[in-house]
Length: 184
Image (cartoon, rainbow, N blue to C red; front, top):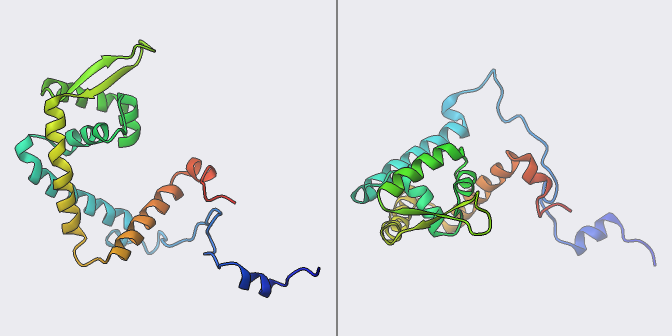
């Protein structure tokens, strides 16, 4: 049987984007000679993050929680960290900062520490009843603020924005790119 030609191959399988399944080559979208902070996606993302945080904090102020406090509580509530080290990884910060934050949350009666029975060096974290109640209100505030910032966006645009951000995270983490499930 003869081998199919390239044009026959392209008709039998769906086309894929040029970078799908392999590492994208860096393109110089920015140069030092033409760099303008107002045109930097880093600056724009930072401005969006600051606006999100400001609006969320206004909505949760009755809970007396700051973003630095509700973030680890929400991660704990959603099963994304039950130790200071796991929370630090998910918050992209150092364990010392998380430990100090947990001290404040423990003093507020929102978190309790529990020594691991399997490894005495590990301290597990649990939400208290008060912590569970407080964090139960936060997702509603977050959803309201996210929707405010996405006014005028279609569902497709929101999905595309999230996809772009995830790709940028992957691009910025070479270790994750090496083990990406999209690799051929």
